[in-house]
Image 1 (tube, protein in one colour):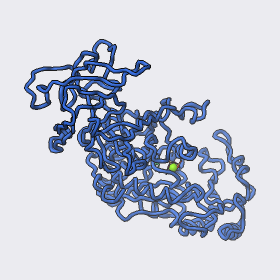
Image 2 (cartoon, helix red, strand yellow):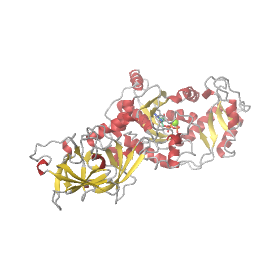
Image 3 (cartoon, protein in one colour):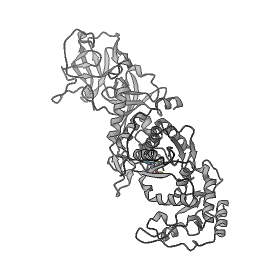
Image 4 (cartoon, helix red, strand yellow):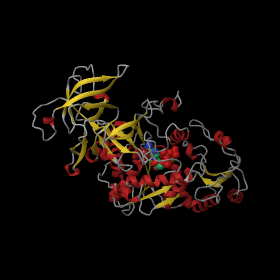
Length: 566
Ligand code: ATP
Ligand code: MG
């Protein structure tokens, strides 16, 4: 997607109110940060962004925008084994697309490695950090539990000189992975386990996507995160609730170093039902090919939602409406669907597409005649104008719009019955043609020329109106219909079963020979339509080729002008 398209869709409108806004308003009143507001979004480039990250971007960017502040994008790239350039690039694209405007402020934690190293040396010199030789298992055992205090490592009281020497040699690569770590020297008996001499550096002999082989010691998240915010002079470090218990540790580091100290504010993660948000699980779906990539339209990722036809506005409205809270909760996926429906109802051009075609021959309509009928592009927006649709003797209607033995209240086509073809004529079903297995394969109908939409003189009214395409003019397309990715509301809640067992086996239905009206022939990937009575669709950016258009159904229609076909 090019830059122009990305920025064309960007515009924040609403100002959400929540408890974080209240804190910031108070800080501005008391001039706590000299009126400054500076937020950031700090993803680890170890996967694609999902809807929860989108909420964090909207929140952090929204605050900067609403308080005339600044917003940074910062990659927390401290874990070389799991991080990749592909993720960095996708994250930049997604943040921009969502409208998070970081201007030229894109930062990488790995660019601060030297500074972090120097600060670690400072802590060693103060007697506040030491090199430990215990192996990871031993460290875990020594840490104690929630009810028992931890035990001090036998290496805890090494001299400053020895620590400085060992730490330097760790950096130089003299030791193997896991052989030594640098730990903060705080309190092994602290009721907060995070304060029991947390690890600051571990040895990882791995190539970093930006630093190459320059480093073989890498800072832990706990050590790095607070000081990254400090270096960038962030005012409000907004993070999710699981970091509440880490706050005393960040405070400790910043106080010991005597450096700039941002204020951390925690809020609850946004969760969505019928899906998973863990990057580890999403990666598994990708690697094991349960989906066609991170942007498979069934995934909860930003790139998947974009490919499926979501707009940034719809995602922003959803995150605003689901609210920023202090307690975890699961948002209903139908709220997300509601917000895209609202948006596309106003903006998407209408079109006719027949997903499961049944041929109709209009026996009293002249052969070789074609009429151009006028169709409204969007009844919600007259400025979108009209278009011409060809009509001829043979058309296709939806198989489900005909029933030989209809239940009561079926207002579409039945033997001997009448129905209106949208924007065209009223037709009457005269004869039902079946194959040798008794399946209906064709209908012979007659039309009434006086019933032409808009100009016909007939006063005749029928209860049903159905969509159609002209047999000779329609074009074939592939249409992909999606259902929930998981068959249960909270796939993470079931501890008995592996989450893969809870996947919905019917989450994707591919219709390879749908028929669409010819005006859609040259639609560009990414264009959104409403297929009347079927929902909103978007031309797929991945599988569409010169030969064949592929459409993803973004969302079904809630309201429709006819009777539903599905
Ligand atoms: P992990 O750290 O396990 O890889 P993560 O989802 O926390 O996964 P990060 O890249 O660390 O991934 O997240 C970047 C930012 O997005 C963090 O500030 C985090 O708090 C925020 N964030 C992540 N998930 C959600 C969520 N579900 N709702 C709101 N914010 C989230
Ligand atoms: Mg995280």
